[in-house]
Image 1 (tube, helix red, strand yellow):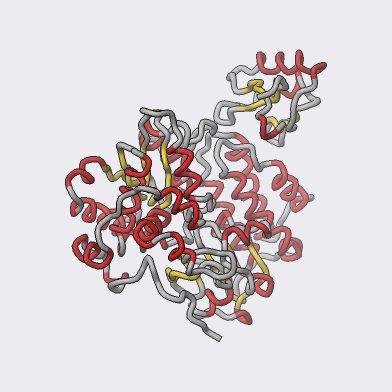
Image 2 (cartoon, rainbow over the protein chains, first blue to last red):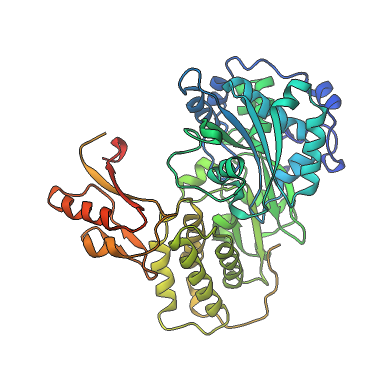
Length: 407
Length: 73
């Protein structure tokens, strides 16, 4: 049965978001001006808003750590619109349709944290989102405009990683740096830097106006608020605003998917997990609950692999992509992911070397934690989910035409 | 902070010289590409001289000893 998946849209309330950006005047008429930032950090903590870039780190906690820097020290805010995850479309959709919610959140962060600069990072391949953010910024009052800068980030998987975002602002080079120091402690120009996903900032814009109790009034079970998901259940991915905690099956069914036609579900994107569809269908789309199960919602990607598709072929393609997206700074990531992609392709082609699967399993255990950023951790976590839940498919795979591939 | 020391590595510097693994095999082995896999935890006192030798031997200054963080003691 198809149910309504969000009780009512919040980020996407107002004019039809498919028609493009809501102009500043209309945005102000609908939502009113930005409230003063007094007490905002406490409000965010009570809202239990988690970051929407992938890791789900509590937004209020992150803001408080930067607010607690030594008196007199400067701070920087980065609105992260890099959206490197190939299966995600939601940040682009949000920036294209509601750019002023994103800017509201960024300028609220600037005021609440006493930051000077606001940097808006948008990936270079998101042309319409970049244009919408540029137009929106030009519509803002002069004092906001003068403190903000729109930066084009390379369209790479790691561009949105927080130390890579800081590195881009500092040096023009968008690769991760060794952490610590964390950007929260030492970021742009050495100043404590808030790197916050654009959807997280858009939620802040509404929470600041309506309060934490309003935010928590949406969401099922212990999950709070709504979130943007990119749902792949057919030829084209669909961005939906869903109640946090709604079931994965609901999200797919509302988008035209069905359990009997789904071979497997990819939850969380390329750093996420493959799940057998029957196991996946009842899962709550809630970052905290999923974490407890060793899973992640990532940036909100839910993708159904059709019965005609093949987990082995899809996994091999993802591993090749992730190997190519290594920023080639750390040996284990650069060499390890390339070796993994080669092995996956040999299995895909039905000509594995002796001990290939055992070696893959060993590498999956050896690579995590051995890069400056979490790229090898995410990539091997994804492969581990495939080997754990679809190991038999890897053992018996024969070469075949690749059909039913994910977008 | 504590007086116990553990190994830390800057992965962006490490070039896989394998010297550290030769000098402190009790804590460091190498993967299939020659890059170190470091066992977690504090270096026992009797191995500390070997740890310092491993740190000093790294041609790229990628390896260091640091106090074990309080939350990981």
